[in-house]
Length: 262
Image 1 (cartoon, rainbow, N blue to C red):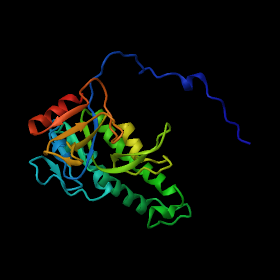
Image 2: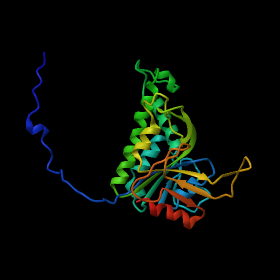
Image 3: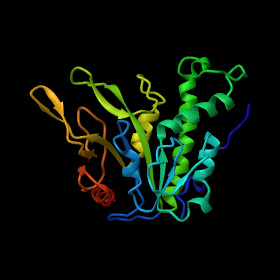
Image 4: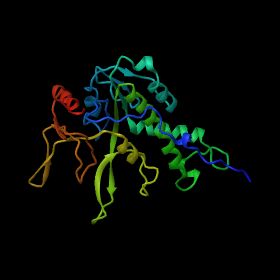
């Protein structure tokens, strides 16, 4: 039998670096933008302060914006996020998109994480019930850690995502459907990349065209709104006292969106 000595008081003593602070602490922001295809998520992201787009979805070709091309794998993406010389001139790093990044994470997981019996598998389901999704979840956490290091270095991070319609559980009545970022989220709630990314972000904005119902028909005039407040029909999130519903009609107005997120 192995005897394990109890931890001494010295082993659990608080480090000298602890300190108490109060008041508001300005810092870079972690932002998620999601919405339907073509609504202008990438355009809006590009209006953030001094942006650089990691264009893994190849969605910024219509914009005059600094971008990093040639990111084709999970290793490429993580290497770019860790390249200090590449990122140093910019204040906001945009990953476009998180949905595509998840595809890269899945490909890396299948190529590098073996089944418990030792062999690699071709599909996430081949790991066994729930095990593959947990492996993918663990892999994606590495991306959040990479982006947190950028936050610590003084840079904003924007994760652009496509949207999906998901069933929202309602303990007080019938479940309902709402728009959410298109990221992995099993019905069990375990190993949900979507939930973890939502918790990680300071701001989650749903970008949508303005639509009104008239005579039973939906009508719109091309204007858009960014919602940082949650509604029954979409998931969103905001911090502080800044405006939570922000009209977005042109590039100048789009920059106002970013002035609110601090």
